Length: 372
Image (cartoon, rainbow, N blue to C red):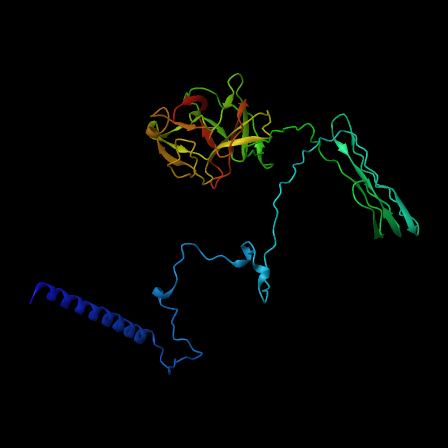
């Protein structure tokens, strides 16, 4: 076969294959898009979808918003069947004006109500009076008096509001008259409130003269009968109360050492006793700073670890000046909380105990400044 014949054969195959391929493509396309003449769909009112599974629920980055708080769309009124969409009311938050109080003058005149013209009946008669009168001490005494008896209809024309017609019925049953005496607030006065818990002597107690020395103990016994008390003038050395910040002991109450015959026992038999401080010579008001025998622990003393009973045995090694017979007392931290100040009088009380024949015995009382 020559070369020219071979070329003619190739072109003949190409002309035959290309139209055949196009024809096959058209046939395949028609088969692909052909609609079946008969078809059916299984449908019903009950859906087979299950919205409960977690994977079937939509995921929101933000919580869905109610349509009522959204801006109304521009195409809202273009529906063939408009929908009734309700929107919440709009609230406007505006700042309120601050009103500065105006201090009242000592003498003020109450404002009269606006003039009114009665249309029917007689106009009500009112006599308002709210004129506080201030004396030189600045204490106003307002007097309120009102008398009204009638039923009327009147037209009131205020200065800043439109004209309106109001009807009111005033039927008072009596004429109230009140007199108040408030404290003037123009010039505030600070009054110091007394602190502490003062006491007063029992009316059944007997005031007896004192022979108890103020100073170092000398072994001399002094006694006070039960149900009696004495007031000691401290003279130029009064007790000064500073406050709870001062924690040193201020008093030393010296008991008598207990003896077996002529031999000392190294102990005391602590009698029931109460101590107080006062600013008055008769001690009609005093502050209790120590009470042995009332069953309450005196934490402001150096004997708070012992049981409070009459004639309690206490070793002298636990007493001032270690050893000694001194019971130390801190008046600043006493439960009665005496106010800071100077107290020139010391009250010594001999309470009544079960053993009425046993008197209170003491050696001396000394003012000290011993650290706790």
